[in-house]
Image (cartoon, rainbow, N blue to C red; front, side, top):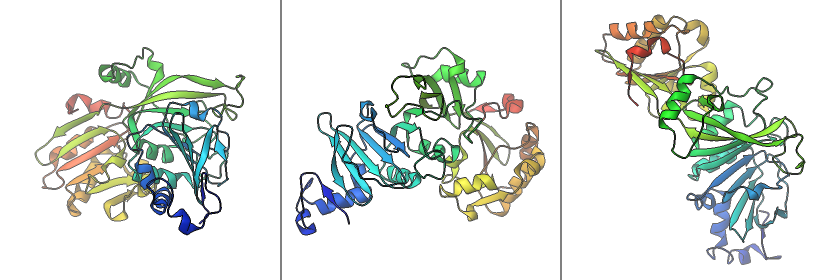
Length: 379
């Protein structure tokens, strides 16, 4: 293993074993290579910057205590701004700035692997930077602002996270998630928003999968003089800052003699561990498979739009499937093509003891508006 430790020259590995941190650097190096080193920052503010490239000017001006960086290429750096190299192994470089005790951990690994390390270490992100990312540089195979990656970021986000991106106005060119605006979403947000968050313009509030995105402002434009700053938008018009908050849970339900229906404004991925089975599209299964959904626990619908257009027929199929597979709780993507009364009719006519609960997830706030008056708000 390649090894560098600040202030140590040409030591043999046996000598290195007697140095640094807990005076047991073998354990220290193991903690860096695995996750134990990151676990020591569980009570700190954490910023994650994937596909970071080589420009770090201004990075440590951000108000966070730990910066986790990743790039598919591994390149040796003597320092990041005025944080000096503390330890370097063959895959990790650790930098430290003593005057304000800020740490930078740079992984020369693919972004998903580093994100899994963050999650395994029990860290919660205070900031996520999706800028100049893998769709342009760094060797990554996906844009970190795409829903396939960003949904995994939200799994480790704190209840209040800053999101900085230069992809805000480029969604027509990139396969980004679609942030959604609606009067009902803005009204629900205003009724339960934190006291220190002031937003008067509904055009600045967007919703997605159980989260609220508030546009805080533009940090840099291409006509800015600060071209050397790492947040300068070289590949787009501007770099925008958002405040991302967990949306107040929006669950509505209705109970029939044999089955309870739950309509949940959230990402179906949260139901993987909480459900006996999931009914999903093939595309959705491929994404959820990365988060632990097995084929045994899933029923895959090959042509979702065609096969789920009739709400009553498809609801009957879901109920029969759950009964045959002995699923007590089954979760399903939204279906019905905008006409959902058949869901209630099928549930009302159901005669068997299983399933007990059908959870229907959606990420568009207007879904199921046609039956909203018949549902009871749970939370």
